[in-house]
Structures are given as structure tokens and as C-alpha cells.
Length: 299
Image (cartoon, rainbow, N blue to C red; front, side, top):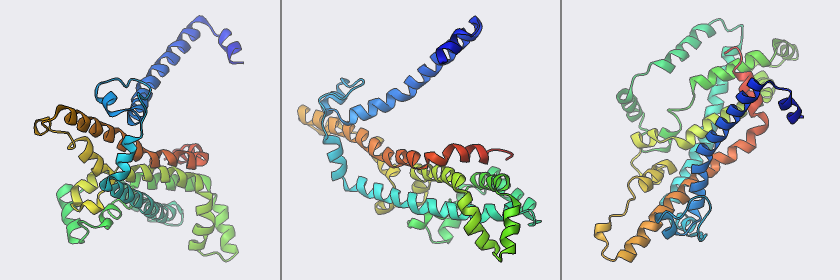
């Protein structure tokens, strides 16, 4: 079928199609190769990594890197903290987004236009870093788990997407029918709007979840306790500050082994840190495309 379509194309269309496929193939290689290299390096022998033997496939495969990750208490603590911030933070995000998006979607709410403008204003203008730090400090959230959850409780952009989805997808007739049956506005939101909003909630789960997992700035600004640090801060310490000082190691062989394990630990930590986010995609793939397309219409 595809071959028949290609044959029926004009010469110009064939050249254009070949150029597009060639460019897409090059982009795929540029994006995919670093990922393959990191995974291959994480399973390779430490000496093969530092000597540059790893190109595409693992060299002398080993699990030393992942064993080192499991034995590193700081990495396990950071991973556990990030999972907590991901799950609890995303739940807070979804609840707050729905509680804000639903009232702003109701036509009978006459002040929704002005309130929406106030929300949009915050997307472009903010108090800045110093006032934000003073506010968080006055709320006594410095060095607490709350500082990773509350300040980012809702994204205005995601709220607008959710509101747009509700307006364009859920007809007002359902609300009128629910009122006839004696349903309160809150019950209508919980029993009708939320179940019908699964596609957009799946999209927002992905958006919020990836943002929570990759959050680095908040922890750097407000956390000093290692027991509360997310995996991103632990990776920063390993990737940037975890370099081996060769001048302090007299034995060249020991120095090489130490440097090799340090490099191997970096790649293994990166792979482990990417696993939870990668698992989000297949879980919400069913609703992802529909939610993105519908939520982006008439925004």
C-alpha cells in the first residue's frame, strides 16, 4: 500500500519525502545514541568505560554499577524521597487543578473571566526569588517535606488546559440533568466531571509527574537536610562534585579502579533515576493523545 503511494508520487514529492525521512532518521540517531550509550556504559566494565571502549554495546557486561547504587544509602534515600514527592505532589497538583478548573469552567460563575486573568498574570509576573524565600521561611517550611509539595501545588498553564477540556468536552446538559436528580455541584464534579476528565487528568499526571521528578531548583533553594534531598540533588553531587582527585591516590592501579567505579556509578544512577518517569508513559498512554488534542483546542 505504502509502496504504491510512493510510486504514484511526482519526482518532486519523492525527493521531498526522502529528505524528510533522512532528516528524521538523523534526528533519531542523535537522540537515541546518547541514551543507548548511557545504558550500555552502566552495564560495562569500569575500565572499559574510562578507556573509551564502550561505543554502542556493553563491554565485558557487569552489574557492579547497579550493586554500587543499591549499596549507596544516599542514592536510595534520594530515590525514596523523589518517589514520595512524585506521588504525593502529583496528587496535590491534580486535586488543586481540578478544584480551580471546574469553577472557572461554569458559565454561571460571572467572575470567572476576571479570576482567570489574575491567574494568567502570575504566569508572566512574579515576586522573584527573594520574596519567595521570605514567604517560605515565614511559613516555616524550610527544610521540611512541605516545601517540595505546597509551593508548586498548581500550574496555571495546566489549569487552563484542564478548564478548556471541561468546557469543550462535557456538555452543560449533564449539569442540568444532575440538578433535576438533586445532585449538588460538588457531587456533580466528583461523580460526572472527574470520571469524564480521565484523558486530561492522565496528561496532567504526566506533566506534573515529570516536573516533580526533575525538580532541582526547589530542593537547592530550600533544603539543607540530606535526609530530605531528592534524587536530582544526589545526582548533582555524583555527576558534578563526585570527581576523583588523582593527586591524593598514590597507587595508579587503585586510582584507575576508583575513577572507573566513579564513572560507572554516574551512568547507573542516571538509568535508575529515569526508570519511574519512563514507567509513567505506558500507564497513561491510553488517554494521552486524546487528552492532549482535546485540551489544546480553543485554549
